[in-house]
Every structure is written in structure tokens, then in C-alpha cells.
Length: 119
Length: 394
Image 1 (spheres, chains in turn yellow, orange):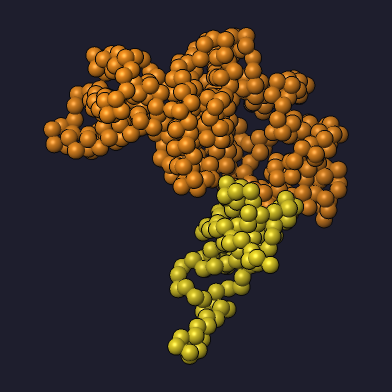
Image 2 (tube, each protein chain N blue to C red):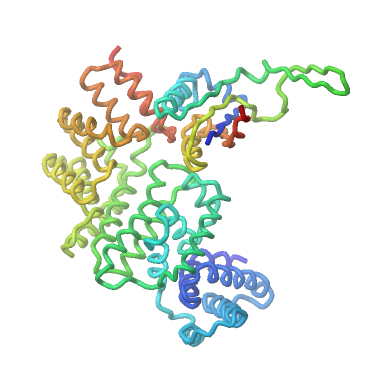
């Protein structure tokens, strides 16, 4: 079964990404985590996202386009990226989630993926 | 009301165990009537004042609920009636039933991974959220598993008793393993550490079964480990045993650990936990008194591996060889473990990295440290490993 480990970050977390002294949460930590997922053969995909201010929201309402700058949600915690992993069950997925650097900062959300559409 | 909270904290497991016995081993029923009794206490006590004997009041109230329940089920069981009579006559000085409840929780018919949560819920009285956080489980899933386990206890007729002498040590091993699993959550220094709960349960077992050696060994093992807790951290960084400031070790706890280990070995029935505690004791003596006991320690590791072989035991054996500069021996063990599915074991990669660094295989060492960091949950350990990686010769 596949699960998404969804990373949420605060403004501080986004800054810490490039702080060499924040070794448990910076890019180096994410690099090590991705490597561990790969080596265990459970990594199925994922991506890190650029800062929330680089986001653009598009909506089509009553046939009219609405485009806005900034992320979809106006909240303190923003989507920072996600990992897709293969796990036997939720317990195993939670064990991987706890090792994700973001779990030690703001937190991660674990959600099962829908099964792929029939071919 | 403070008195209700306090009674819940200090007496919950005790009362639940008594009521489980009174309801013929039906833990779920006992939990039900006990929580009803607590709800009633919340209604009655603030109005009419707390009773002189809160435990007795709660048991009596819960007892009436059990009688109602059995009447409702139209079950005629005279042994239960008899027990309830005894309970009514004497609600204060009732023999402690918690040990029997621990044996129910760790019964071979109960699946291994739910035994510890079951103990923590029934005997310690922890909430689902607390247990789920400590073991990284979804609270909803954990609750379902606990309900299923309690149903099994009832339907399979798991006996509510301390096993006979002939099977006591085998069954006791399961109980101790489950308690030790709770202690294991404290190594990570996560917010919901169950260290004090595990120590509490082990003390309870030591007191109830004073003629058994392994509970004393387990208590010693936990105390040796807990005594170094503060020394294991410095400025947000993990500090390994050999670099710890021994002044920070809890000497009182160390003495207690020593005393428990000694009285365990006096019973002349050694086992896994006594050997593990003996290894800890050896490391303590080595650091504290500067005794050169490397040979003895390695011999103890060998005994442990023969008594209770596990990947963890092999890894700590390899770790001992590494810290005593017997790199080839360490390498042999690590190579042999490769086929044992250790690639998700963080300590395995730490040892591989340490070994590679010692042998001057630097690019390998970088790779292995990265791998270990990726498998580490504890930020303080990440900081420690990253420093090791950064200080590799370029």
C-alpha cells in the first residue's frame, strides 16, 4: 500500500532549510532521509516545494478565470513537500514518518493513496 | 475533584485487577464498571464529600454494576458470587491482583505487539492517546486492537492467575519482554517516554515475585540505563557512553541497580536480563573506576548472544569490539548480519560508518553516516552523527 508523508513547514522551518547549523532539519537531513527511503526500497516518489510565496492559485468560477499570488491556504503551516512510500500498513508508514526531518519540527501528515485507476 | 483524580492515578490498575478477577477475567467488563464507578464518584463525591476509603467505595459501586450485569446475562456462576461476597466484606485489604492481570496481558494467546499497550492501559491506566504516541500508532487503530484483544481474553477463557511454578519462568519472560518494550520508548527521549511506567511495572513484579531472578535483572538493567540519562545529552547533542561526564551519572540509581543485580545473581537462575544488566554494570565499572575489563565484557556479550540471540545483541557485541579496537571481529559480525535484514536498523549503519572511518574508507563512511542519519528520529542523535560525518578527514 502506498502512503504520502506530507511535510508542513512554518516560515522558520523554510528558513532552516538552508541553515547549516540546523542539521536535523536542513536540506542535508532531507537528503539523508531520502537516501534511507531509497536504500530500504520503499521510496516511490515525492518532491520538495519551493517557498509558499512562489505559489500561484488558479480558479475558474462561473466561467471566469481568477488568478491569485501566494499559496492556497492562508495559514501558519504551509505545504513544504511530500514523500510517497510503499509500506505494508499504517504502522510501518508511521515509523517512516517519524524519521522524516519535518516530524521533529512542525510535523508531517500521513495519508494513504487511492489505488491507481484501472488500465 | 482532586481526590478523584488522585485515586484514579494511584489505584486504577489495582482496582481494575480486582474487578477483573471479580468478573471472571473479563477485562472489558471490569473497565466498563470501573469507569462507571468513577463517573458516579464525580457526581456523588462533590455533593456528599469524598468517602473515607475511596478505593473501597469505588470497588463496591463497581461490584454492584457487575452483579447487575450478570443478572442481566442470567449467568449463574457461584465462584463469582463467592468472590463478590468476599469483596464486599473486605474492600480495603484485598490481595493485589495486578500480577495476574499482567500475566493475562502477556498471555501467549494475545498477539505480541498488543501486549505492552494492553498492560499500559489496564494496569497503569494510560490513555489511548498516550500509548499511541509512545508507540507511533494511530489512536483509532490502537483502540480497535485493544478491544479485539480484550474480546479474545474473554472468549478464549484466558485464566486470570499467576501461572504454576512449572511454567512460571517461561510465562514471566513474556511479561518482562512486554514491560521492557515500554521502557524502550525512553531511549529516544521523545515527549511521551514510558520510562517511569516501565520502572513502576518492573518494581511491582519484583515485589510480587521476590524469588524470581529475571525481574530483578530487568529492574537493574533499566536503572543502569536511566542513571545515565542526563549524561547522554549535552547542549542538544547525544553523548555516547565513552564520552559521557561520569559526574552526571545518578549515583543513587546506580547503587540501586547494583544491589538489584547482586540479589538477582544470588538466586542462581541467570537469564537474558541479568546478562544485559551485567554488561551495563561492567561498562559502568570501566568508566567509573577505570577498570580494564574488556575481556570480561566481551565474554558477557558472548553469553548474552548464546542465551538470547537477537540482531540487537549482535550489534552491541560488534559495537563492543569496535570500541575495544578489535575492528576485524566487528567487521566479521557486521558482514554476517548483512543477510539478516538489518538495512533498516539505524545502529547497524552507525557501526558500519564507524568501522569504515577507522579503516580509512572515507567515501564509504560518508555514505553509511548519511544512511544512519536518514534512519534517525532523535534530533540530538542527528546532531551527533552529522558532527562525526563533518569531522571525517577530507
